[in-house]
Amino acid sequence: MTLGQCARSVLTANATFAHIMYKAGFHDIKNPVKPAGDALETIIAAFYTEQGLEAFQSYAKLYFVPLIQIASKAYDGFRYVDFSFLYEICFCMK
Image 1 (cartoon, helix red, strand yellow):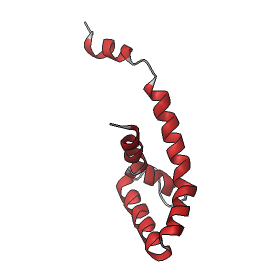
Image 2 (tube, one colour):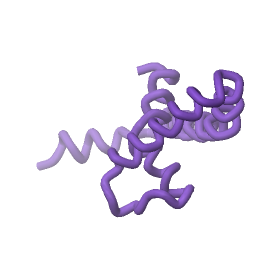
Image 3 (cartoon, one colour):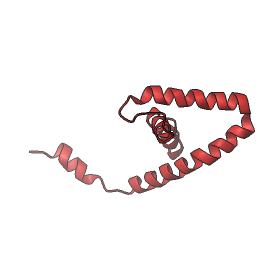
Image 4 (cartoon, helix red, strand yellow):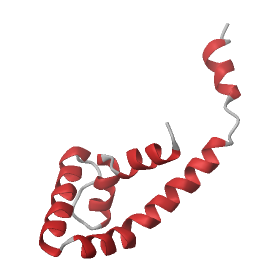
């Protein structure tokens, strides 16, 4: 999976959308994420339909660029972690 695919997967996940809805005060974090994710998708689609591409692009830059930057930093940090200890735990148990 490329960085772009990874970022897209994380940024469009129901869990990410549910977290955004939670931060906006519209989702209880104890509830399932799918309905909240679907609700945010619907809100985004309505915003795009009513306000147009330029307004949507401004919205996306304002709210999703910081998420993309955070995902990129997390990916970079994760990529260089030595996970060889997991091999020993998983495959070298006696």
